[in-house]
Amino acid sequence: MKSRIALCAAILMALPLRAGEFDALAKNLRQTWPNCATVMVVCDVSNSKATVEAASSAFGGVKVMVVDVKGPQDIGRAAGAVTTRRPDAVLLLPSDKVVSDGSSAASFLIQRLGAAKIPVICTSEAGVRQGAVFASGPSTGGKVFANSKAAAVAGVSLPSGATNI
Image 1: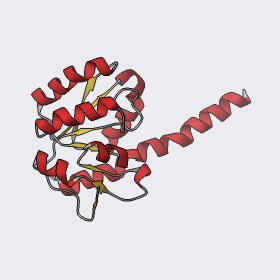
Image 2: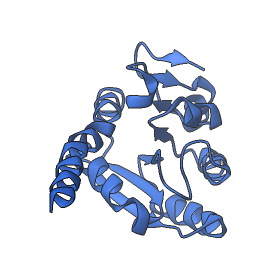
Image 3: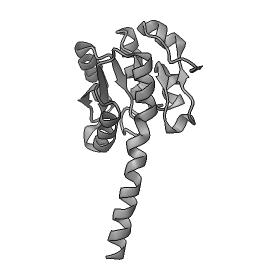
Image 4: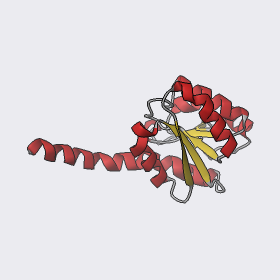
């Protein structure tokens, strides 16, 4: 019984951390691209449901759409679906088992979307180094990292005060 109570307490204490994971990114998105109405997430939904919900909450007022992938073999199809729907931005989830920041699947997706002029945003420096337009979040230490080359290709502006990588 005590272990159940401790487990429940630990889960409840972790929820606010997860809920705030995308707050800085959402704030920068609204300030930089105020007309952004849709953000698409490519992820393994079964394993990233809580993270998608946290992102949706942080991006309140912006429609968040999801493309479900089960493995790297689905990334080409996902890129096609994103290109067809033309969201204003695509969000990489930092802990997704298939398309997380730094993964080869994320690199492939970023390249395909860059060619289609669809900007990618994320919460880590690793994602920006792969070609995401900008990142801010818990792992950036309060900084906003940007990729000016990716922004130029996508035809979008960068957050003011961002550190170019």
